[in-house]
Amino acid sequence: MKQDQILQQLSKRLTPLGFDIIEPFSVNTYNNLFISDSNKTHLLLPTFSRHDSLGVLIGNTRRLWKPFIEKYASDPVLSTSPHPLNEYSVSSINKALTELSIPSEVRYGHHMTREGKPTVAMQHAAHVAQFAHYDNQVSFLSYHPEYGTWFALRAVVVFQTEHDLGELLQTNVQAHNMTDQTKRELQEFIDTATTWKDWLRMRDVATLGLLDGESIQQKWRYGPNQLQYHYTRNHSFLCHDDHAD
Ligand code: B12
Image 1 (cartoon, protein in one colour):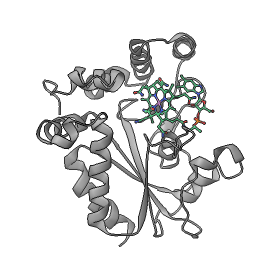
Image 2 (tube, rainbow, N blue to C red):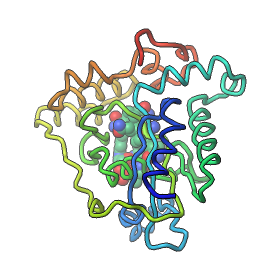
Image 3 (cartoon, rainbow, N blue to C red):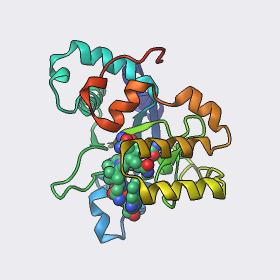
Image 4 (spheres, rainbow, N blue to C red):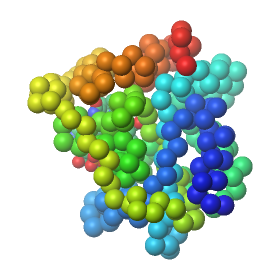
């Protein structure tokens, strides 16, 4: 199956479940970020003894919430899980991959090694995919031109197949223009944040500092229940948001 067909098939299965971010990237370009650092080997993606392979980044915006909550309410496995959203991501993505039946390996953003280290650097993958600029200097958040910081990165899949990215191998995703004032505010949050409300305020400040910040906030900021569940993991927020997409 060709890259376009793979992306189409994944999208057909995952977008209705709320995973509306499906982006291809070069596994070789990603691995090159970590290959010469012996402290980062846990982040390397499988190569299947190939020079390069097709990687696919899977994530979501606020559109995840409605289908997730519907499934949560009707599925006893999810509703008794300690981490229902992670469980939903794993079961949805694994099912889609089984149906595709192309040799692949998946890494989830929330899975850790036995030593408690992440098994994939999702923000670096998003940067290499030219999907979102990773600011690894000040805010440690990723920025998408349309969604701002309001998206989550769930998994990457490495397919045992060539990618078809042509010249798009270099990571030239546009850096956003952050004013010095926003940088100072964000740095202050990084230095002093203690509660989840501080982290949330920081994400608001980061998004509002973008060129179309106000309209991005209005359109893409998570609804109240989605927000509070993300930041507190408290199951009492696992219910519909009014007017959510
Ligand atoms: C570990 C982790 C954290 C740690 C970071 C501390 C640390 N130094 O490891 C903690 C628990 C503090 C954290 C907090 C949050 N995280 Co977090 N986190 C991750 C995770 C699992 C791995 C990050 C990583 O290690 N990358 C690999 C390394 C090699 O990348 P790196 O850039 O070189 O790592 C550097 C930074 O971590 C930096 N760093 C150093 N000190 C600090 C201190 C702080 C406070 C932060 C944030 C970073 C930071 O130093 C590292 C080494 O150079 C990713 C998911 C994933 N698998 O990628 C999510 C992820 C990065 N987190 C995410 C989010 C949303 C958050 C929060 C906003 C709250 C939340 N969980 O919802 C907060 C606040 C972060 C912020 N910038 O405002 C999102 C980012 C989405 C986006 N649009 O950018 C991700 C991708 C998860 C997801 N499901 O989407 N996180």
